[in-house]
Image (cartoon, rainbow over all chains, first blue to last red; front, side, top):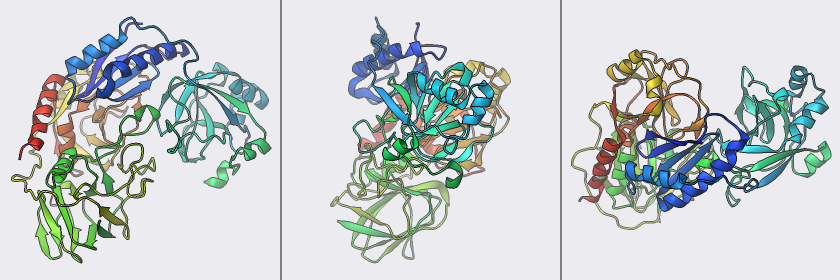
Amino acid sequence: MKPRIEVVAIDCLMVRLFDVIAEANMPWMLAATQRLREEFGAALVDLVPSYTTLMVHYDLTALTPAQARALIGQALTDLQPQAQGSGQCHVLPVWYDLSVGPELSLLSQRSGLSVEDVIRRHSAHEYQVFALGFAPGFAFMGLVDEILATPRLNTPRKRVAAGSVGIAERQTAAYPVVSPGGWNLIGRTPAKLFDRERDGYSLMQPGDTVRFEAVGHAEFINLGGDDTPLEAQA
Amino acid sequence: MSRLLIEASTPLCLLQDAGRFGVRHLGVTQGGALDWVSMSWANWLLGNALDAPVVEITLGGFTVQAEEYCLLALAGADLGAYIDERAISPGRSFILQKGQRLRFTQPFNGARAYLAAPGGFDAPQVLGSCATVVREALGGVDGFGTPLAEGTRLAYSGVGGAMKVLNAPDLPAKAPLEVIVGAQIGQFSGQSLFDAFNTDWALDSRADRMGMRLLGTPLQYQGPSLISEGIPLGAIQVPPDGQPIVLLNDRQTIGGYPRLGALTPLALARLAQCLPGEKVRLAPVVQETAHRQHVDFLQRFSEG
């Protein structure tokens, strides 16, 4: 790993740690995040992680660009990857069903797997949270089994229900709130993904790991899930 | 406490402050006043903290009636404001007696006006800010991202406040917008780099608080496709159609389009006062120079 520092704005520097998306990036990303937070302290405005990069937004009344670069250099000196499992591990219950996950059939066709096997493969892996974006609490997770990798829909849906679980290429995610969206939907989770009253606000944080657990309709409802079919909500 | 009753409004009239910080790694956007300079002057006129909650009024169509005596200040665009039948220009604080109306009619110079009150307008802090982001249902008077609407009351709890006047309205000269060039700059074609900084760009009518599209000669990016990464305020991203988009306060937090660079905060404040169809030029600047200019500029708020 040979980090590069790039100028991106008057008060932002991009720390480029890797060139490809890989689960093995995460222990390094977590370690760099922690060191950068310590090094910048109160002069840090925001630190935005995403797959291979960390964008450092610092207070430009506190630091010059040269000082900010120097702090990044110090933070990355002798960096050691954080032990696996330093992020939280979440188990998200998912009701996999065609009524709330209409692309289950598409994924089954494309992969040649039965719908049951599609579900088994999706819920077998422990995913890494690479980044949050698109909407508050929307976690980009991966990597999905290659056989399930499916491009986004040609025409995004105008309205995707809150809790919808989807796949795009080798990534998976759950929609925290109703929004437009182009991911292939395979199920729905009753979990509250973003809550302004919760400490830390977002259930999932960058660097956490996530496992999906298939639940039946009754349990989904018991956990507070909304089983309104996707079409009926349009 | 003093109160104003909103009698007319539009979805473009929003409670704002400097924005929401420390939560962007959770996918929460920044939000905040698009013209931070005018917001700062509106607050300065009353001796407030420069980032106290203000009303951002875009293009006009906003009317409030004072339910009690109110001290207010106005900065930014000239949106044809009147106190009852008397015209009032931006760059000053003023008194609204009980029953008097303040209304904004239409843009005469600039696009966004900022209305301030002593201590700032009352609003709940949501994730550390009252900035209204409709898409995320965060901020505003109700805390859930609702734009200011007819029938809503604006209140403030501060007392007194300075009565200052701005000598020169701080509205922008038509100088080029300065761009801190980014790491991908070398991957645009040579012709595109020439075009980017030597031709006019017209502001598209497709513009909102997430971004403003610039229309002109399409720019050609020749580099590889990119992995999504953090997007700074003012980033000029170039999608495959070659028409650049300046990303503003309510932008998404990460994205994967190549970028020319990012506008400086001072350039962003000027851009926020431009109307659709207006032409702008871009000029490159290095980070250190822009930083020095910015810090010098901030001195103005501590004078007087």
